Image (cartoon, helix red, strand yellow):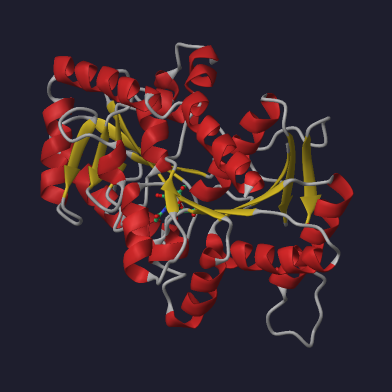
Length: 375
Ligand code: GMT
């Protein structure tokens, strides 16, 4: 199949899922065409025989206060579909991708070309941004006019049905991880590079937006480190970073809390880690929790959204109410103070991650494409 994938090319979960999906599909023999404004960060090679990137360019024009990205994207999609004989258009994140895809579909129909649109809902496109009254009408319209809709968790599906007037069936296809790729990576990892041998290492990875509650990450860590010698690795960039760095500095935590910025090597960082902290306010799935678990890192998380579909309480980590930093710290200490228990949870986390292996999940997307084509 010739498949065009529209996504955000950034470190965010939806872009990572879209990119890894495209790479996996290309290995299965499909021709993949990424259409976005920048080469996706997880895409190392492009323009090979069956993995291509088409840039969406938005010229700056001073009359416009807001540059019309949807317009540029829908025009580019028409070109890409025509010149590469695309069979299916798969858009990740409803805003504005599903809307632009609908416009492209209509323009193509005008030329006698029919193309199905598959829309994957990722989370904030529904629970945070899409739900805003200024966007809701267009988001509802684009979801209802997609030929097939998928959501990354049952929780997100239920949120979508509760928040929007949806007439289309929503299929749940969970996020995934390439377990084999991790097994092939060289071991052991040099944890001594980041912390003294006896220190425990805790990690948080996110885009440091308010809904990630990174202040909770630090509070939980402070409670833990008063009892167990430990370090915290903070990976990512985002709007809350400066404030949290100032807090860390003011409270003399500089030696213990390391800010590593955005990274393309999160598997390497996770292989150093004993526990992963994810106290989010909202999380439709929590891909990063799955990535941690696949690396054998138990997860101390909130119970927001779809996290309980990934992180199993008392098996792969623990879940607490959003904001309950005391319970999160207690749960972390249960594992950090008991080496046998920690070892057991690491093993169980890795086993649970296998259920989300790419080989199982990619076939579900292939089936969705096939069905959309037949209809
Ligand atoms: O978490 C973010 O802020 C990034 C966001 C995105 O759209 O890139 O992540 C969402 O999609 C991921 C991939 O499907 C999910 O694993 C995240 O849970 C989801 N984030 C939220 O729902 C807040």
